[in-house]
Each structure stands twice: as structure tokens, then as C-alpha cells.
Amino acid sequence: MPKTAKAKKKVSKPKTKVVTKSKPTTAKATPKGPIKISKTYVPKDTEKYMCEKHKVYFRIRLTEWKKELIKANNEALYNGGMDDNNISADIVDQANSYIDSNVEMKAINRQIKLISEIDKALRRIREDTYGYCLDTAEPIGLKRLMARPVAKYTIAAQEKHEKEEKVHADD
Image 1 (tube, one colour):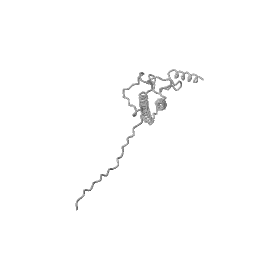
Image 2: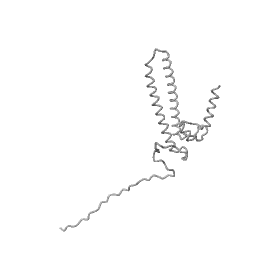
Image 3: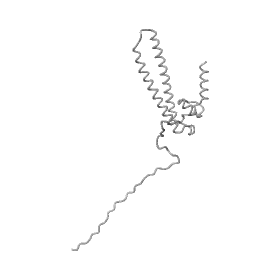
């Protein structure tokens, strides 16, 4: 019997298409992540007022200031509590100790209020209202914010508020 060659059939697997989805391009360029600034960066008047760099700078500065205040308050409270065990028999020493602790507590209370103001400033940064006067919505100015990062009014509006406070305090 003669051998016949059998034709081998090629079995082809169905080809799968690899589909890559391209991101739609938009006219607005979205930031690729958080903006990073150098430690020596200082906001400049030549940059757009309250640009992302400015916001990052002030956010970092306010956060570091808050950490310093909390650390100082904790140390003052811890060290101040240690002195209470040394009650003197001398009435003058007791009076001095009382005055010292009273002054220390007033300073701590001022710092707690300042921490609250820092939190409000950080919230304004998140809400994109930081750097603008709460009364007039005008820019506060970089020089003023560098001097007082928790400033919420322009100089003119701040003077107006202080005059009103003085008038009401005299009543």
C-alpha cells in the first residue's frame, strides 16, 4: 500500500487585539502630584499671587510653626507641673511661684489661641481663600503674610477692626 502524504492542517489561534486606552487630553494641564519647593524658597512678588508654590510654602511654614508651639506648650506644662511639688514655707516665695505660674499659663493660653488661628489659616489655604482679606477680598500682600502668616485682613481693614474694638472696649 502506497504511503500517501497527509496534509497537515495548520491550526491558528484566534489573534487577540491588545487595546491600549489613551487618556483624553484636556485643555487644562492637571498637576502630576503635589508641588515641591526647596527649603530655601521664598515667595516673590514677580510670581502670580497665591500660586501653588505660595500655598505650599505657607502651608509648610504654618505647619512647622504649629508643631513648634505644641512642643513648647507640652514642655512648659510638663516642667511647670514639676514645680508644684516644691511648695515653700516662705509666703514671698509662694507669691512669686504663683505669679510665675500665672504668667506661664497666660502665655500657654495665648499660644493655644495662636494654634487655633494657624488651623484657620490652614483651612483657608485648602479653601483657596488664604492671602485674601476676609472683609474686602483684596490681596493681603506677601510682605504682610511673611511677617504674620495668620493675617486675615489687609492693613487698612485690620486698623478698622482695631479702632472698632477700641470703641467698644471704651463703652
